Image 1 (cartoon, rainbow, N blue to C red):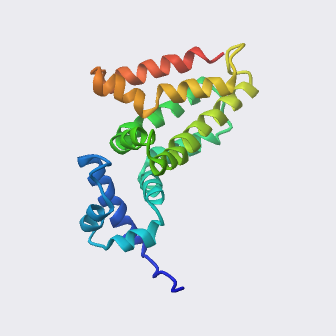
Image 2: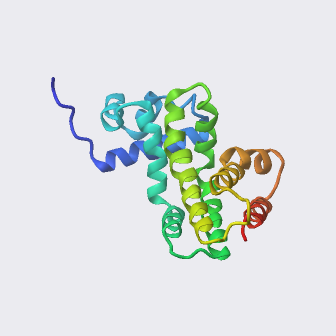
Length: 198
């Protein structure tokens, strides 16, 4: 069997940028691989060679945005910080809330599609569940280990509650549908976080 040709990083980036634009503009259902290929100036086969599958493309899209985002670097640095003070908790949550509006247009579409689309589910599981929820879990566990969680608060449960409170679907319900400002959303989430701390 002939080995597929290597795909340059520049070509992969062009594909991912085109996919982000199309999904944000027209929705996931209308962003077919043919349209993405056309927008990126490549063939559909090139997309397959670059990402292997639709799930691979969707996951790579979120990873691509992660790599361009200073907020992700902030989240990673805060997650490994030896600090365990309340200010760190607020900074960690703020870093995610700064990033959420940027990825929202694609993340919410992937989240909705994940109910019936296995590829979209795989992308969501990789980034929003695998990366974000596990990050909150590590963070709350460290707070619990140093006595910074309120008595009786389970770190895994606390992580799950905050993760749900800052999930793209929560942003959709409160900011997009109910007209909250980004600052109202941030303050309510910070209040929920502070209620869990000792």
